[in-house]
Image 1 (cartoon, one colour):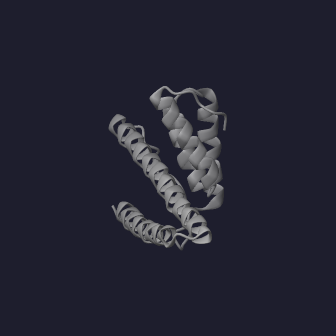
Image 2 (cartoon, helix red, strand yellow):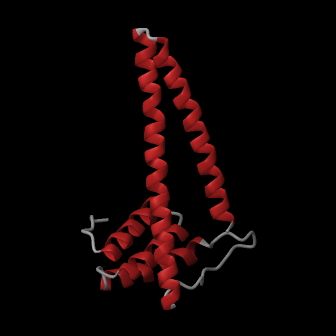
Image 3 (cartoon, helix red, strand yellow):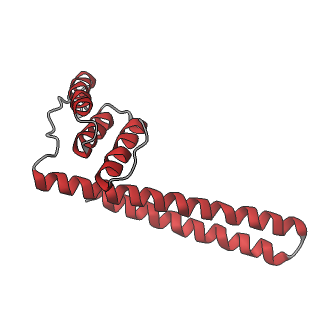
Length: 151
């Protein structure tokens, strides 16, 4: 719940910022000179890109959460079997060990979205966020029956 609240607050702050920047862009355009109109258009592009990025990330999070809920209902969510340091951080060797098992599982069933979901969790636990995201994108695509890109 804490993560959802943090995401919602961050998204709200970003939307506020985009509105603020967009209003400045409109003000520049209304000035009417060639330079201010050019800058105004450039300034308006930034919030559009930011809103698109926020929308795509929100879609990704919602779809990943939907897969997690479905996998949980099936009883297939990965169990947290990772060792922790005294400070509570995930032990790197433990994460690598679980990752090796999840990778082997995914290699045996490359068309199963469930194995890709669990591999994404293992990547995340191993602190490899870019690969975790790509594995989750593949899990989502497989679940939805869409063509997948290679990892």
